[in-house]
Each structure stands twice: as structure tokens, then as C-alpha cells.
Length: 542
Image 1 (cartoon, rainbow, N blue to C red):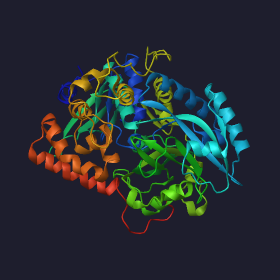
Image 2 (cartoon, rainbow, N blue to C red):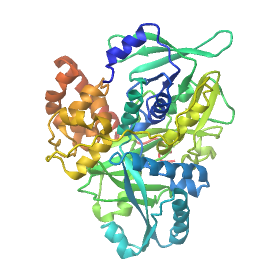
Image 3 (cartoon, rainbow, N blue to C red):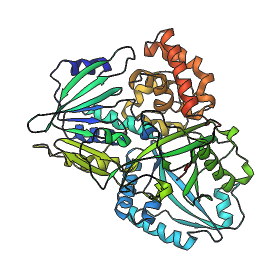
């Protein structure tokens, strides 16, 4: 039985809390490090200043892929590692990571043409060891993508990558870490890395529990190794400075529109007419997503990132270019999300007007810094989290430490349960992947009826409220579930029913629920809805 938050805090507050490693950052990189560390026998603590996956790892493009554009830029090792990890994750967690067909239409005088793109796909298939490329005629293309613009269409190229729910992926990895003995705490801010005054080596971390707004609690834990996996925030803890590398926060924004307004069964890609960057429309959680932008994020990292007006217009051009008959407008948008990517750059100054490297041209490979027991990591891809975790731990130089065998899985498979009659085969596949070993517990948590407009069971909502460290309502609506992204108005009309189910589970009184509901709706309107009508700042799409 997993420890409750109170039990975890009691263990830390005793004053004898010694850990082999403390991981700071509860996104996919930190979760992966905690999973590999605990699985290798290290006593492990992971802390996250906000909610698990609050940053980049709940706001990605949801793709588990090698990155064809990285291959086109000559990053062969990154692409090779990513496609091999993709295949591994597909095999380990079907239902959480699923294959998705990608279709790239080809139009006359468009670069790259079909011959060059097929050459790229041939190499992509060779790196992955699993051929999937296909050349489609115009008629075959329209069978895959009805409603696609046919003006000057010469055909298409098809290939297969994968898609996930990034926040649920983080939750599952964290659950595996805790099953191996790790302690994982959200709303636990790492204030200071403590060091020996004589040797400057790491001795511990000063933490601040911010889960209760009315009061905070300071704790100190002892450790010889701290891993800073805070992504875009890594520079705030990283104490070694390099003249040739730094973190460049880049924002990518997305639109969610009803599947009925833009029905696509695969990811459809194109080069945006404005800047020729690869963009896409793809099915996700019963809706259709349009993405993504790529621009310097100059706002404070302590605030929720949000799409701006110029980005909205840029993304709407995807549907108008690919599906002109759909006539998608901003009135069709259910929700938006914006995530900040922790890209490591060698560009000296971020100033696009003076010719700095465009955001879309930046390298997506990760970088690791080491400083007397403090290891910082930034960059990298969602797909390669396991490889990054293992590399970071090998850099830790822990006496007597041996990393677990590379062949050992990330995920424990789900139990062999009989599918309940009320749950469809497709939804059963998803549930097995989403919850793995916890599936039986999820099914016992409540009714198997689906929440209107989604495939989610009311039982999932009840289980999440009871077992996943929910502190605020937005944790439940935006990350434990994605109701706030796929239901109109952030699921506002459903909140009375959610209140009836979850308020007693969370042990909130009426005043707490009303405060949390107001907080959530304000946050959703500010950061997950349409942007304000004021003019956008220049340089919206990079």
C-alpha cells in the first residue's frame, strides 16, 4: 500500500531522513530518474515545487517519436535512440503509448518532395528496425484523410510513430518508482542545496512544503547527491555556468477542437505556409489537436504559460490550409495549452531581430552538468526519458552503485483481469495502459459509466482523487484527468457532479471546494482558453 502524504512528511520530519539521491523536478525526466534509481536499489526522494508534470510534461505535443525533422537536421544518434525507445515503450505499455499513423501530403513544388521524403523515411525505418513507410497516390491519400485540400496534391507519404497522454505517463513512471521504495512529493519546493563549507560537496536539501496555502513547513533531508531535473527551471539551481551553453525556454502552443468539426483518424502534417515549419493535426482523447508553435518564452516561468493571439491565428492556418472546407474558427476551439520546452542552446543572446538562431533550428538533445554532487540535466525528448535517466545516474559516481540491467522494463504489466461488460474493448485497452498494476483498484473505486463526452470512467476520477496526491482542483481536472482540455469551458458544467463525488474523497469542506473551484476556473480562463483580444507581442511563432 503506497504511503499517504502525511506518512511521507512524517518520515521526512523525523530529522533522520537520509537518501542516496534526491531528485528535484516531477516531470518525465525526474520521474524517469527516480524510477531507475529506486529500481537500482537507491533510497530515493523526488520533490516537485508544483504538481507532478505541471510544467512541460503535461503540455507537450503528446508524441512518442524519433523526430523526423531531427533526422533531417543530421541528429542521427538522437533519432536512432528515440525510435528504439519508441518501440520499447509501445511493447511495454500498450494503451498508454499507442501507434499513430502519420500522413504527410505532397503538393506540387513543395519541399521536400516525395522522393526526398521517402529517402528520409527509408533511413528512419532502418534506424527503428521496423518498416512502416508508405507512398500514397492522391486517391489513396484522400481515403486516409477525407476533406484534405486537393489543390496541386500529388500524393502523400505515410509512416508510423506513437502518441500518449504525457501526464498519465509521468504518473505511471512515478508509481513504478514508489513501488520500488521511492518517496515522491508534489508541492514540495527545493529552496537550497546544502553543501559542506570546507569541501563544497553536497550534503542535503532544504525543502518547503507548500501544499497548504495557510501554512508552510520547512524540512531538511540529507543526501550526497542531488539531481536537478527541473527542465526550463534548471538554471535556477544549476551552480556551474558555461559560457557556451544555457537554457533557452521555448513555448509551444496547441488548440483543441471537437472531433466532429475536424475528424482525423491519423496525424496529418504539413509545412506551415507562413514559416515552413512542420505542424500537424492529430486525434487525441476524442478531440482533434492542432499544433504547434515554437517561440522564445520571455514571460516568468513561475506563471502558467498561455497562448497569445498571434499563435492562435498561426495555428488556425493549419486547418485552413489542410482542410479549407472545414471552416474552423476560434469559436470552435474547446481549449488551448502552452508548454515551455527546456532547450539547451549555444546562442549567445536571444534576439530574433538580430539574427539569433530560430527556435525551430535549436538542437533538442539533452545536456548534463555536474558540480560536486549536484547534477543538472536539461533538454531531451519525452521519448528518451529512460536513456537520459540512466546517463544521469551513471554520472552520479555513487560508491558501490550499479545501475539495474538495461533490459529490465520501465512498466509492470496490468493484472490479467476479465473485461467488465460495461467497458468497451477499446476503452479496456486504454485502461490497462493507463493504470497497469493499479487497474483492479481503479475499477473498484466507482461506477464504470463514462463521463459524458469522454471515454473516462467516473471510477477513474474517484481513484485519482483518492490516490494520486491531488492538492488542488486543477491537479485533478488538468493532469490526473484531461477533462479540462476536452470538455467545453474546462468542464464547468460538470463540476456539480464532480463535487458530489470528489469532495468527500478529498476531505474538503464547502468553503475549500468553492475556493478551489473559483481558483481552477480563473486559471483555466487565463491559460487554457482563448487568448485576450489585445495585440500579440512580436515574434509569436519563431
